Length: 353
Image (cartoon, rainbow, N blue to C red; front, side, top):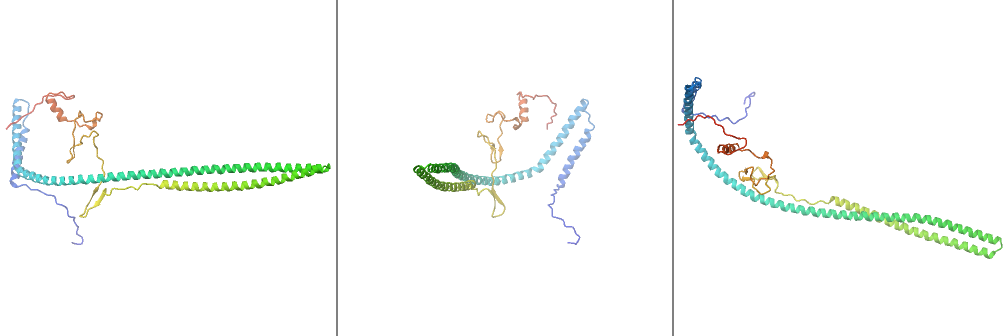
């Protein structure tokens, strides 16, 4: 290729069909006849009987030429049409056989895929139900643990409230004991000053017993406090464990999910010999009463129903009905009354051979 030459992409050339010379000559003769009549039509004025008669003769002449032209066209194309018709019929026979094979195999495969999908759906339903039951069980355990933690919290609060009240009571008892001791000591001193030594000794002994009793009460109170503190600590630990377990149950419940199975037959797959094929789910309308929507399922030809067909629901909007103009006009011609239609006379020229 030269340095500055322009590259031209290959394009499919347009097919030009040339007619045989004799056919071209014959068609030209027909054209000349029509052009002659076209010139004659300009000289005809339909204003009187003579003009009307000339117009009728003109129409008959043009009609004859049209018929001769159609006969000539038919003589040319009929052999080819017969061959095309035969080719189409032969191809259709093979194509119909191939189509039947595809439809039969596709129906069998679709039945398998649908049954496979049904089983998968059932497995997924059971898996979902099992997962839901497991989730509810964990949530139930979580609630029980939360309730137990709340109960323990209330028990801890009760023990704490009792401890505080006990401290108040102990302090009051301590103050009362100290007062009794002071009063006893004072009474013993008063008795001693008055010379009643026996009474003084007795009062001193009572003061000592009160002191010892107060010491014992304080010792027992301290032991009770230690026991209460241990019990409170144990309850707090139980509460913490219950809340921790509840948190674990809540997390596990949130993570429960069914194992969903998928239909491996769906989607597109590459074929060994090239290309791809696959399966997809499509929506297809149907009539609830079981009326077939196709009169010819193979050619996907829809069933045609009249508006008054009892198989149709009465509330279907009129926008879904197509008006048959030809049927209405034929009914009017046959003498039937059709609202909005009537007959009228019309002049029509007829030409016979």
